[in-house]
Length: 364
Image (cartoon, rainbow, N blue to C red):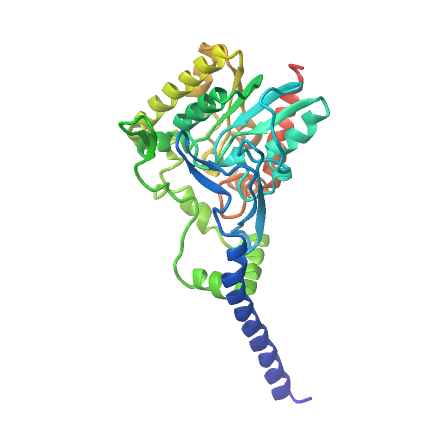
């Protein structure tokens, strides 16, 4: 076979693959998302702004490879769960509720791969029930209002594990507020965690999903793209900078004060209902990048916990060592966080779960 024929057949084969990819992507965009639209399992809430629908059983898109998805399943309370099931108001045995934002919900992962799901599976062996009340974009004003509402509805539980997120401070400072009817409302759009590049990359993602998935996989596998990490750790992205930048810290002081105010209301509520409160904090990639081991979030909420006799869990030392060089920090971020995202991946969730279980079993 001549060289010209080989080149022609190779070109033809590539053209056919690209054309098939384009057609499949169009079919996917038209039909797949109609069956599993983003946000189908979520709803607005009169008392705590937003949440997951009761007994949801749907899928949401995972941006990692452009079109893969993860299951969003909830129970009769609208809490993320391993299956649709009815939760009794009064438990037969000990019951723990986890509360937080997207990290606690476990976005982009199936429930069994989240740290709450892993803890749930392990503590079930000890006849301890675990419930996950965490939802993406929650913050202290919602933490308090949600717990207040579920207690008013008669739900009984013994412990509340509150994971305070770094983004809570910005949300409290500029996003959530109360209207004249004492309802939580949003003032502005939640800042995005993703780097949006409305150019060739976005066109590729929309129209050529196979090529996009391949490019993303190779980029992740061989560390070909550092744009997201460079952006999210830069001054262009403020959401997580208040722990390392004094100017942002001063700008978000209102968010710190508001967070402490609502967490204190939550503590009073827990004390009134004989619920043990535990507070936990953990780093974003930015805190790892800047070796923020003694972070302001630890100082603020660790001090509050100590002053109010609240158990405090600090997950920062799991991810940060003052002596780590840039390569080590980069590898930690790659190993424990979702590619081009700030949330923990499966390994990161497993690390959080194992540390918590070792910590918690000491009190059993």
